[in-house]
Length: 181
Image (cartoon, rainbow, N blue to C red):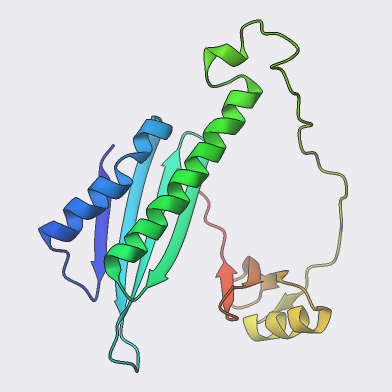
């Protein structure tokens, strides 16, 4: 697994590269089937004398995609936070495989009722249909606010495709555009 490391508004020194590799390189222990692994570090200039660092990590495996984005005034602290989130996600994913019997051979072998705790598999319990009308992103944001929702699915008239607008933790909006591939 080769990790792609890119920087925006920041020079990636060997020290930074080594630290990222040390912290995030351990993920392949949890997910040996990693196909693509990318880390992007951005330095954002703010009004205060402190700069803000944004670290984004994305892992693509066979049928799995993990993503994390963390911010911090200290670059190494932001890298630590991303590494912690990605490790937690990888362990949770690995645990789900284990429970379904696709992971460790222990789950596929005979074992006592005492160790076997079957959790119900989540299922779709409700299907909601609605008309998707062409609108701009601004109109979609207005509709989302009007409905008091955290996300809104709409047909983007400008891009001529279905998009998902969502509210971010920082109060701003995020837009998901489909990418066929």
